[in-house]
Image (cartoon, rainbow, N blue to C red; front, side):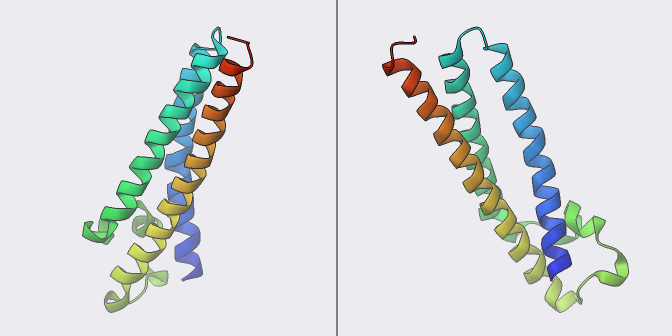
Amino acid sequence: MDELRKLAFFTVAKGTAFGLLAICCVMMGFSFLPRLALQAGGVMALAMSMILLAKAWNISKANYRKTEMWLLLPDDRRPPETHARWAVTTVLRDAYTTFAMRSAGLASGLLAGALMLRFGGFD
């Protein structure tokens, strides 16, 4: 189960990192307007959080044999068929919700920074 958890967090972290890279690129594009850059980053991080929560919500409907985590798992390390569906969906749901909460924390920090710039007179 521990190996499943590590692979689940690895695959979700990899996908989330690509989303974070896109958010950083957009924020760099708006770097001439810092408040707008922070607002755009906050909104996109919040959207990423919602997407991750939706994926966590719908993971039980997905075919676990087609997940990236299952494909990365060596054949000799895979759990038995009776236990596999429950184990895979449980660890993936945990990984998705963990990264959704981290993304929501990032969004709140970025939006708080935008508010501080707005009401701090730096606009």
